[in-house]
Image (cartoon, rainbow, N blue to C red; front, side):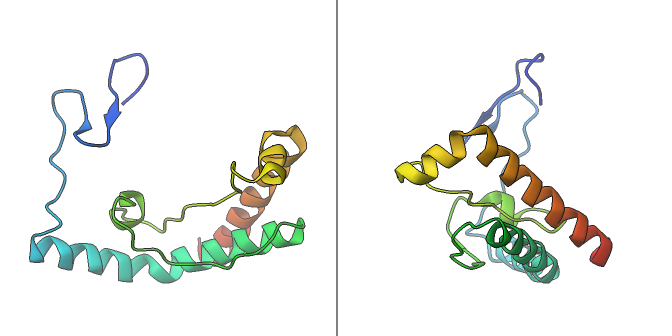
Length: 127
């Protein structure tokens, strides 16, 4: 999927390139069981990576809201991966201080540095 070939992602319909795979039916008990197995298999590694990212953010002076596992509908990236996966909440654009930090070059560089450092530590421990 790329810019040059005209493919795009549509939340309601998945990839729009003519050969799109069907999304699993989450009402199917077998599919739900498969997703649960994936989640359990990678949960510890995902939690470890998320904890390392959180630790880096805290060391840079960011507010910690803790590492959380969320099972909200629509967070497919966390449920359908064959690898550890996390979502990183970097701040809230509805908070003026967070928004200024997220838009600043220093803030962006610090966020990237923190995530890269966490991934390096993760790979040293688990890679």
